Length: 90
Image (cartoon, rainbow, N blue to C red; front, side, top):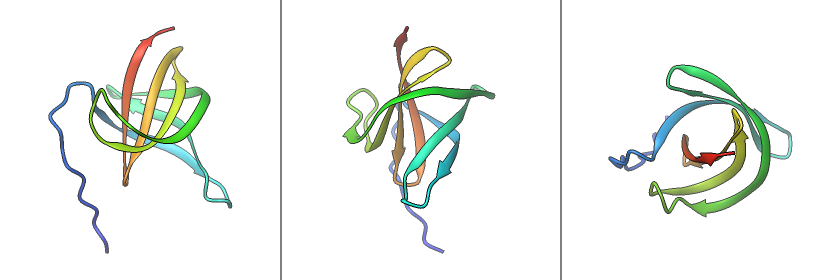
């Protein structure tokens, strides 16, 4: 089995999380919910998907700009791990 090593950053803005997602036949990944502070939150809406760096938390990957529990959020898929940045109250 191949194991990917992702550097661990000690950054309070970077929250690794569990994500439930759908993978379609074209290879697209659509996150449906995340687990944050031991609670599950649905992804309300995804407004943008693009490769991007996280300037606030460090790291890079596929960035999903989405609304989770009414909050604008960046959700990143970095290698094989998901992390979330909570941006602001909407």
